[in-house]
Image (cartoon, rainbow, N blue to C red; front, side, top):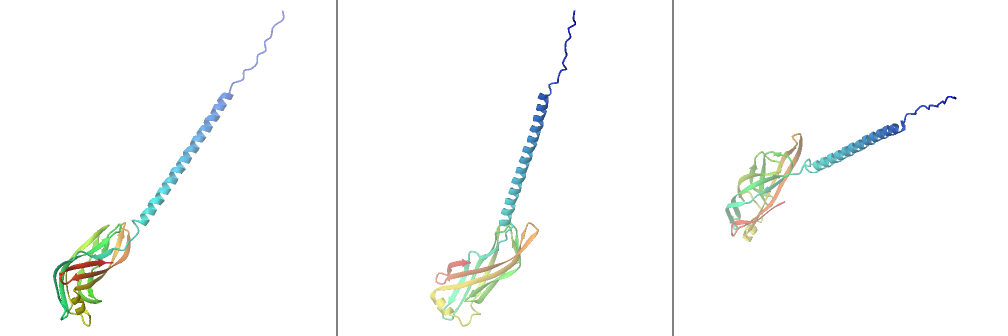
Length: 211
């Protein structure tokens, strides 16, 4: 009886599925890393743009140094005498000198004077003491003012006094420095130019205008 021989074929390991799965895993990992890098780049770009906006805003607002303003405040008349025939006048009043600082840092200024004038000739002065106006604030200096026409010569004062209105001017110049962030100091000079009109008949203030 003839022997039956069976041919045995070696089994081939089924690795195609595993290889495909490993390749897909590697591809997914690379894709995930790429997305993370893109997100990081976007975050960095947003942060840089934000910093640029902040720096621009600070440079246009906080770091921009503005000239402080010097003005006269309300005038409270104590005495007001006028003599058209002489002609002469004298007056006493209280007021405030206001130094308005709109900067993001204090304005330190030196001592100065406010000069009151009639048609360009001085009729009196008051002192502004050395001080400072704080950040975004107004420094108010209370003063008592005494003015008279004793030093005036060759003016048309008599005609003006007869009209019933006396117009004077006040002028001042402040020099100082604005300090920002405790490291930056910028020199700034402020000036006052005010026009004051007195009603001689009622002995009251008619108008006060400052430029």
